[in-house]
Amino acid sequence: MVGILIAAGVTTVLVLPIIYVMWWSSKTSWATLLPFLIQLPMSLLLNLTLKQWFSGVILGLGLPEFSALLLLLLVAPITEEAVKLLSLPLLWYSPLPHPAATGEPVGSWRQIRAGGVMSGLGFGVGEIWAIATLVSLLNPAIGGYPWFFYQGFIIERFLVVFIHGLTALVSYWGYWRWLPVTYLAAVGLHTAVNAPVIPYQLGVIGYMPVLLYLVFLSVVAFFVILITLTKPEKRPRRSKGKPNQ
Image (cartoon, rainbow, N blue to C red; front, side, top):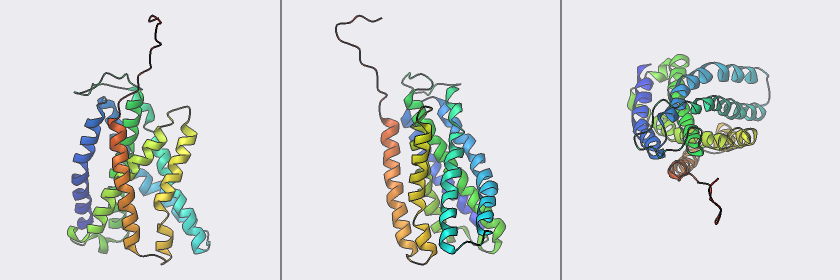
């Protein structure tokens, strides 16, 4: 069982420096790291409990294979994007300023965007350990291989972390007013990311097309996140010829 846990540790060590650089580039307060930290255990709890229960219920219905796969496809986007949003209230608490902070107030759009990204990235890192734990518990023979046998696991989990960051960013973009709309948009995007799983499980396509699709989406997610985090906060324009009120 140790092998896959070591692989999870390797994946985490590889992705954490990138996540730190992303946070630093946002120039927001330390409060935007709170969603990352809280999502680590929340991801573990969701993946090890509620998602397993939902999956068991769906599989127990005796549905045709395609219908069961379709329902299983929706479990992750609906539950995971909802859990990521639970960190949103934390962004109103800012105990320490960022060393390179630009002075935006707590609750600014920059803060919300960065907090959303960190929420998704934290969930993705927690999911690395959740999957490793599930494999160890449910299939200890496979989980006990030497860690270097898990190159596919390491690559896939590394890539998925950034996709989680992007879907959370989409959801947080609505803040409070448009939150239902952006949450549904995040669920739709998440579903599209997972969609190739169905033809793969049915034997229609192989693993390589799925991996290439994942690589493409993760690269897009990485650059969208980076551009979003480094984008300056828009300032309201003052009307010409009018004194400040």
